[in-house]
Length: 473
Image (cartoon, rainbow, N blue to C red; front, side, top):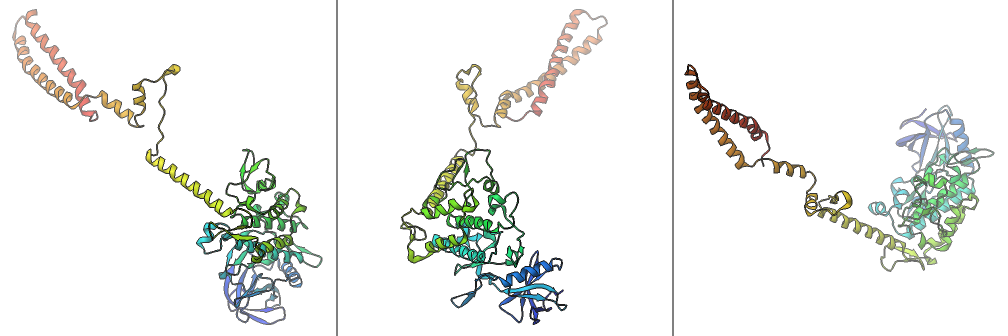
């Protein structure tokens, strides 16, 4: 099987083609340039195990192509969708893949990157409501075209959709992973993303024949995110701790908090701009996220509404009088200004709190403990309670140890006393020992000397270790 540059493959008419440079390799197959066809690429599947199914699916795609031709914009050819052009075979005429139009990935970005304003600005992507409305309208129009052929994306999410940065046209890749309608046969899609999966499919997956309902739900989620600064329609503030905290769980429980009627269990996010949407747009979202799947607007309904808002001549979007970079719906407040003001206020409050913590050393003062019986604490107790933690033990130890003067006096007196006792006591002991029959009066001085010697020794035993081992004051 051809797997590297320079290998020869054949299209469905038997025309030989030469594999060029490898562009990418994924889980299903590898994509190569074609030397003889610079506007096409070849996708070759890794394994021949599922080749018969892939071949039937590709034939169905060739027979029911959506009307999404390439667009000429400023002299450039913009491919909207990488739909199959021809089947490919090896020398033994076995099916190995297909060719599709080459799409200039370098001129496109993931739709995910335009949702968050900070990331969009960092990458030079549009941030205004007008550009995002155009992207939403173009996405809805593309899906409507696919749905007319009964083809469905199923795993529809911002990370799987690209757009041309300059022209704002949508660019779709990996179309062989869609749910495809063939003649008497449905080829299902194998992937889903829980954050974009409708409530009825969260537990059991997308059932056959329900693919369009899933596409309608995911499209509504993406439109909401595009028009509401990336906020997911099931993100919000729960009123009870028992509610799900994850998005799939909230979708399954139908916890949509941005409807025209307040939700009993969820509050909207404070940064949401949904209240600045016109009534017609809010009504569409209410239908899309209702508990009845049959009420969801079709892709064509979304395309009709959004294209009208995106058209400049219609005057539905106007420039903000406070910030020329903002647009808002005519007759409605500027949601971008409100959001910026809220975020700025939050940032100022955080800085003020940080300065207060820095001023207090970052430590919280512990309140004085009241004596038993709830009697007022004495002034001395209050003052003691204000000693910083970790220093109270040191202060107590220092107050019970002798000072330098006391230690020096003890050392001098002890040394003199011991020397005096030893120097006076030894002659008296010798005189007493020389007596033949010593009397009681002769032993009295010696007894006094022995007592004084014992006191001197006891003083050294008690105080010298303290002087040596205790801390300095």
